[in-house]
Length: 238
Image (cartoon, rainbow, N blue to C red):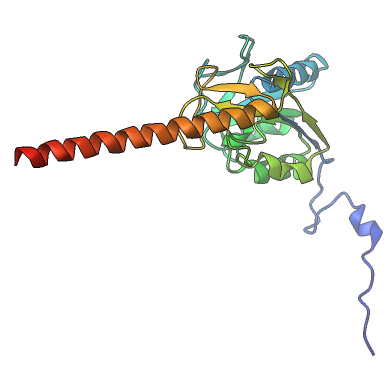
């Protein structure tokens, strides 16, 4: 005869203590803002952080130390709006650097350019589930190849809300869901602004990728031709 495991007691799930009997504070929230470059993600993040601040909640902003485009110690939107922040190489060091007592008093944590933090998932879990913080993060959901960028999409199962923003296609003015890289650089992390990237619609993303591939192929062919000509000249001299 097969045996059945006894059901989990709902009273234990509803308990305010963890398995060690330690009392836990109420759980927090996680809100995710994603979209292509120039979609206003940082603007939306700052708007929510400033609103929380005006409502009397203690707030702190974090950005990656990799992002030094506009200011070292501030989160800055593309139109120049600034907000002071903590600049960190990783998120799990934030509590120690901010101070344990100050961290305990925090209500809301904003994270800009979240795709650059490898420990994003672990930090958000701890901050919201166990520390009672409201975490609001903004970041790219895809890279220039429309592939998952960093850990941002991994936060979706944890999130209370997800906001997908769009920009305006720089070539036709339609809604832009994607980011097109203007250079032939192939590494995933290439920090830049309008000099390197542009927001585009689906049609112009596909067309743009085709143009970039053709241009890259042409450069390779020309390089091979130069090397071949150089080799023939050296052979002729010998």
